[in-house]
Image (tube, rainbow, N blue to C red; front, side, top):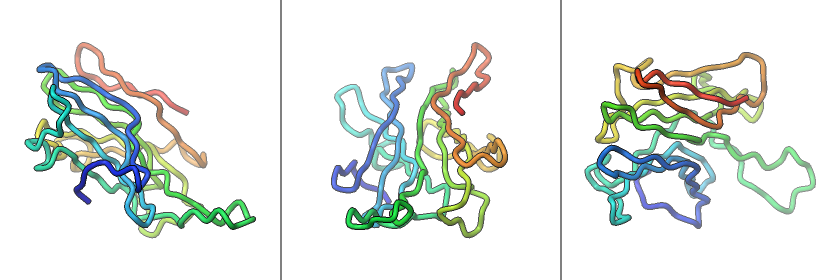
Length: 171
């Protein structure tokens, strides 16, 4: 999926970070027409336009889980009938070398066939300044963290220290 943010499909941005040359980065999720959520990072120019040097169109999208959820149905009476996926980017930070660290969560990305009962895990991505995954980070640009057995691992924020070490906080 490569498209502009679309209010018809419940796209959301949760956090913003600024680069050393006043670049603007925003992270959240983009939803498909079927309701599937995918982590998204948008890069904007100082004029507020998508920067097309970033992943060719200004938006880098990363599908971390194959679980697409089930469509919301307001006519259902059973609370478990509608089930949107939890995949989302929650925060972003720019390291001193210009690389981006994104934290978020998704249904266990290592699960081959996730369902509504699949536990969510924390997902860390590191991107190069062009929007591609930094393959020197974790496994091919991504690290998965599970607190084990908790149904809703959640991350709320990320920060770095003077040595570019990554710190995340959540529950």
